[in-house]
Length: 67
Ligand SMILES: [Cu+2]
Image (cartoon, rainbow, N blue to C red; front, side, top):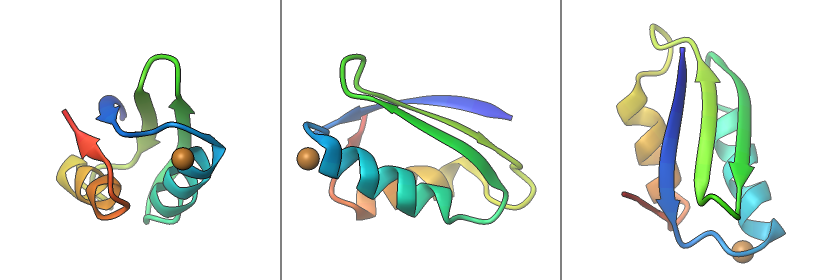
């Protein structure tokens, strides 16, 4: 499935890489696209392997706020 999360606190390519790498490493996640302009993270994933809550948690662990 595909989810678009609104995320606060992302400001530069470091943030983009941190989120793309950490969320991308989760089981069943196929694509992660971060938009600094829109303040969104678009994730395509298999929710039977990684539930939505886990993705949200991962982004928060990286220091960003999912709003
Ligand atoms: Cu940054």
